[in-house]
Image (cartoon, rainbow, N blue to C red):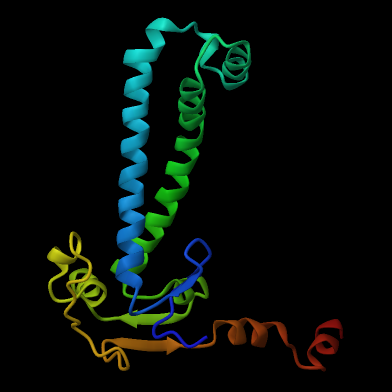
Length: 188
């Protein structure tokens, strides 16, 4: 696939993340993290203030809650609410990892491909310049209105990037390959 400054292929969005949609992806990850944490804290507050005084200790555990629902002692919405409280903490952790990696990629000025492959690329820009290259000249407005975009860089040339060494696997391979007579010399 040809995607300008391709970062990665997002399985959840089923599209490649690159130059033209990277800011939307970062904003979606940040907003999803905020929404997940908000739902988790509000859910815990509601559980503690409203449901906990009317429930026993074991009623909050999911198998017991399910059995109580089957017996008709609690309504379906309470069962779904408690099930949601079990799902939200791992979801918040997963979204946190995705958000932190996308913010790291944004502030470093590299792509996830370049970071994962350990390509030695030196970015001479500041963190703020890297943020502006993703979010545009009006980066402070783009956090709330992502469609406001005034690009700072030419997407086809990156004069502030230097490729120090492009093939990291070749160097490792050259160390592993020995001359045919090298082993015999050591044995003699």
